[in-house]
Length: 279
Image (cartoon, rainbow, N blue to C red):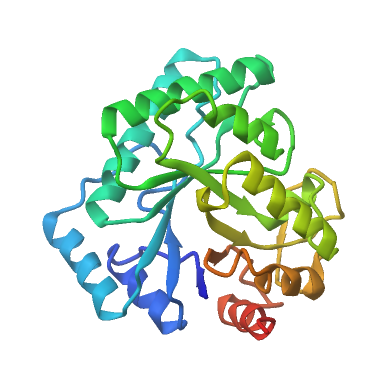
């Protein structure tokens, strides 16, 4: 099984690989640029080669990039909408240079224009990005908790974004356990997890599910609040994650932790907790 954490690129993007390896990860996730900014420095060929060399040295086959938070493919504001498309195009090209397997994207918020209009904007944006990049990386839409006007809290909504696109083989799904729990998907009951896996398979095909963000939830079931917690210390609890990591149809997925680092735990503790649940 592949377990990893979100690692820092401080000191160079190649250092993220070393940080992941030091935690005994066989996958990891990064922001390849400032997650709260638009500007992205162009990577040098030397940086790209160092990153790839480190992947080989530490025998890490799969890595993930999370796109910046500012991207909003559902925005009704044309300037922000085009800026978001251009940023995603740049992110795809950056991921392909680095040999990244998956690029995770929050679909966006309609900010008052309505869900139907927002979903249409997302679909059209994705079509443009695919046309402009012909990507090797697979772009994964991440489910959200359902707060405000954010789109993608249900699997059906995510399906609507992808379905109209004829050539959508480079699109897929990233499932966040905290977001899903907040949106009404319960991992604590085996039957509910089975139902979720069947639904993903029916709507997308399980091969389209590339990454699972394994995060416990600080808030109660169906709260629509995105509050990550340490594994086993939140409302999902150890039983929910034991169900998750031992589900036979999920064992080949990448499990990436985005849990807090504070007085109650860190990446090393959360990784150990998750791995200990594997039977």
